[in-house]
Image (cartoon, rainbow, N blue to C red; front, side):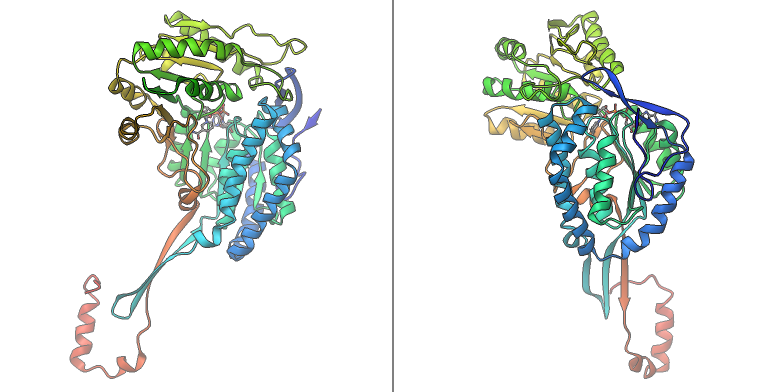
Length: 510
Ligand code: NAD
């Protein structure tokens, strides 16, 4: 059986781990590889290599660091096809979607290629008499990233692209469910010219995460995953004195106003609710039609659109989506569908019991549609993270606005309307971090920043863009003056004593 090794101080490092995780092929349901569940001793080796490499990397001028990013981008583009296949084979998303996963990460690498420009500091000449003030952004040292299974290409690149370009060493602990793409990315960074120890991969589960959170040499931790674990990582990391950003789960709503173009909405919803089998933190699993007429018309159009979805293996170029990641997750999603029925929602389309001929052991789930879901239901309050769309009917705009605003999660939200005023009001007032206006999955571009609100994110700095640069650097501010020595030597006795008195007063710039 293939073993997916750590990448510590270069590739192929071996491990002291005695525990292993199983990596499935979700299309067949079979175990295809094993991954070591690393220990604090594995982490210590990675930290030692990072400590050895980071000062030299930080002292490398930003243009040279950017050139490594340029080469890395070229290598990933060269390997796009192979990386996408590797990603689909472990995650289960279709190949085109895997390419999108990698591409959205590469866009952050493109941002990182511009790091010399964004790292320029601030300067004030003449802040006081003969005094200048300047500030610079310096790397933190060693940063770590802990990433979820659902974007094994994009999310590691969100983090390490910016962290490394800023001059840090980075230790990545990817999801143990699909760790091969992160390993390959680290190998490509080595090939691109990053020194050994600058990007390393340690595999593992809670034991490794705790070792990262407790390690005194790691200055900052970026986490993306489910909310309870995000909150735990945030608390424990901050307690250890680290800088932490921890993105959590989501339950994104799509508000459909009566004037919306329903055909467009249905096309957008099909992709946003069911694409990647709903395993996206920016999926749109809740649709809120405003008014009964809108709700009935939307439901009527959604049913055939859902019926036309093709569920297939990841390599099927005609499939809209593939299997979910593993058997436990399939059981969890089906459990939520049962819970919705028990709570009294109307199950209009039931995706349970779906079987793909020739792939009966694969982790496939058909698409499901619920109507008459209410805010009191647990199946509404919690994240399902599967191919399940819930209709929550709202009588008016204000009710529709309150639903995502009062939900425990606040990652993304969308409004579909032709009314600019309604859209503007909605964007200004909704209590959610990322808003789409006639855009179902409003994932910001790489040079803006990604981050939700409420239980979708702990900490206050977003991912990538300038927020990422702020997260992965600390600001040093220098106040300088260069007194003229001759002027000092000609000072009178009185003048001298007034200077002594000045020294005991909090300095102002007068
Ligand atoms: P997860 O929380 O199970 O795992 C995330 C990471 O935490 C993994 O690396 C895992 O090994 C580690 N981990 C798991 N259990 C742990 C524990 N008990 N203690 C410490 N670490 C632990 O998440 P997942 O299932 O891999 O990913 C799906 C979740 O991620 C969903 O909730 C989704 O909404 C969320 N997500 C959020 C964003 C965002 O930006 N807000 C993006 C993608 C995914």
